Image (cartoon, rainbow, N blue to C red):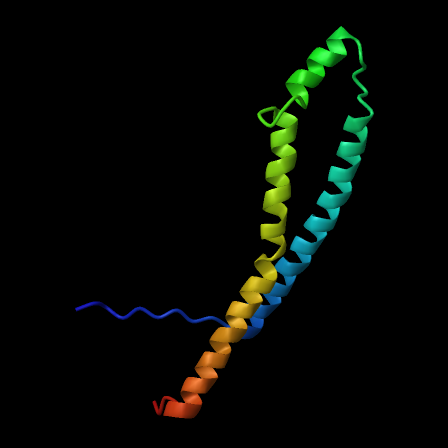
Length: 113
C-alpha cells in the first residue's frame, strides 16, 4: 500500500512569493532587452576594426551560429522569457489549487476534526 503524503502551502505567502518572482522576471526581461540592444549596436559597429586581425576576430566572435557571442545572445534570449513567466505561472497554479480546495470543500464539506 502506498503511504499518503501531503503537501501544505500557505496561499498568501505563496502568492506573495509568486508576485516577487514575477517582478524579478519582468525586471530581468527589461534589463536583458536593453543590454542585448546595446550589445547588438556595439557589435554592428565592429569596434574591433575591418583590418585582417579585426576580421579574424569577428569570424571567431560573431562569424556564425557556433560562435560564443551568438550562442550566448540566442540562448539568453530563449531563457529570459521562460524566467519572465515563472511568477505568473506559479501564481496561477496557487490560485487554481485554492479554487479546487474551495470547490472540494463546498461539494464535500470540510474536515470535522
